[in-house]
Length: 259
Image 1 (cartoon, helix red, strand yellow):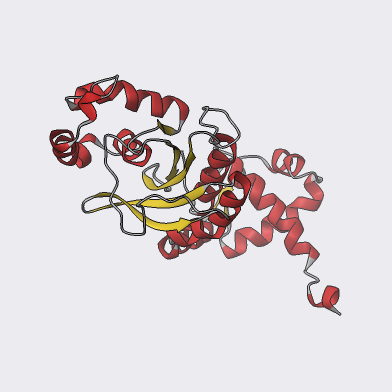
Image 2 (cartoon, helix red, strand yellow):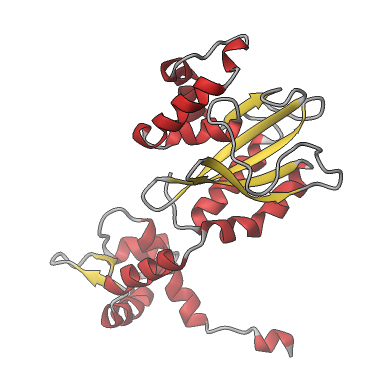
């Protein structure tokens, strides 16, 4: 009975394969090429495309090639307007905490800087003074540096200057006294698609943070993983970085984002 109640309409599933392939194309495509990509003959694909044309899911140019139509755009925009990145991210945050065995947090850009909006603790919680509402330093935390690397300079320059003025970051082995001093670190973050701190600003605690992007390629979230240095794999391609990057990519996909 349960299987019967979940039985779908096969023709819709077949037609969806054509729409998915069309969405992957950057230019209008001929019917035969679209059908081949979807694993069917042109004769089988043609009736589906006729119906999609009638309702506006696809459109056709003068050369007879297909591309996504106005209805696809309308539905996509409605979905984006209703999208809540934090809600979408929360759905996979627990999985990341389980996969890494570490503390995980979601961070957004707030009026005062990067702000924690959700935390997920492992079985053995990390005893640090971080909670929902905590604002992270732009210069000395993995999360802060991540936002400094991906946000437009005009957005962060004032807070960066204030952070540098009140921090003791200049006493570390790699002194940072100006925004320019921080640029090599920000370039490294962009190179790896990750931000990393080791024993800063909390001694004995390492962290990695990955960005989530919206449809226009703007950073909307930071996904933070942190844990004790003794057991935390902080390598760029290590056992924590890989699931973290996969999680950030999945959230980006869910919010219709592009990196």
